[in-house]
Amino acid sequence: MSGKDGVMEEEELKPQPNWHAMNREEVFAELELPEDHRLKGLTAEEAAARLEKYGRNMLSGKAKKTLLAKIWEQVANVLVGILLFVAAISLVRVFTNDPVTNGIQVGIIVGVIVINTAIGIIQEGSAEKAAEALKAMLSADAIVVRNGTETRVPADEVVPGDVVVLSLGDRVPADLRMIEVSQLASAEAALTGESVPIDKTVDKIESEDPKAVPLGDRYNMCFSATLVAQGSGVGIIVATGDNTEIGTINQLVNKVEDQKTAVLEQIDNVSKWLAFFIVITAIVAFLVSFFTTDKADRDWLESLSVALVCAVAMIPEGLEAIVTVSYAWAVSNMAEKNAIIRALPAVETLGS
Image 1 (cartoon, rainbow, N blue to C red):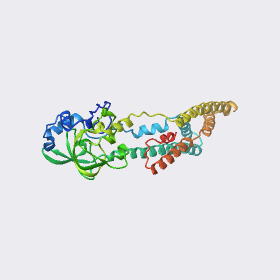
Image 2: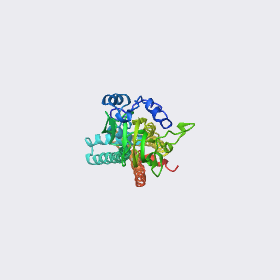
Image 3: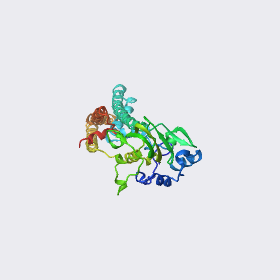
Image 4: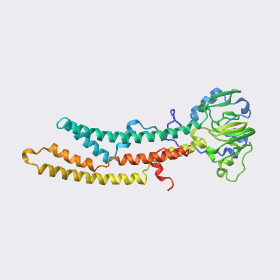
């Protein structure tokens, strides 16, 4: 079920009856509707009660990450941590010794981190917006029978049991069991992959295993987000929100756990080994600089600066940027083919 803001709630979806295998009377009985429901529809009170029971007709989604969370994901690695440490020491030296050189060093390090972080956030943000655009497939409103009259209502307010009137060009607001059709056909390519509109009927589908009937063969059903390509018809809403077929797909996508791809895992391993050698090298450089200097001239801050310069020289600052740009280039190429990729690293697994 969707929350008030469309954020996914931790609630298991109830299994849906095999609506396509039921006749009209069985559908009405399952939804607790009277025999003359086609003419009268729901009353305002009944609609409000069902809205409270089933929730709004909208697809849920994961809670959106804050900007700080996105920034943290981009900078939470060992190499960036070393760079930030070096920048902090250089910033201290700005106020104690050679402000110009150390100021430039701080600016370069911070600039590299900011650019890398910005590239990652912008590219993944664009991909998320493209994924959110899929929800625009849903209908904005619907014509339903309420209190005996046809009324146009917002699509997120329709409920199971509503009588929906469809005509040419309408987008189906929810999953419907058709009870009247007049040369009705719906384009279901986005859901079933069928390249041509599918003619609809009102007869129940006979099958030994109703659940095994493919969506494209459920000719007495119209599904949410599909388009009426010809004719007209009347249907009873049997599922809304995440209980619809497209909602089920949406739920499965939302439950996919984030996993690191092979390249990201290799980068993490390389970063850890690099960090180890960089720390060892920095310690050796500090000791050599400090103990090879005359006691009178020894300055631990100066020796630390030498060590940090060695550390910065060994850090591949452009590694993250190169990987991100490569991913972004691949995402752009896929976008030209009308493929939406939500997370940049996902392109690595395509074709494998």
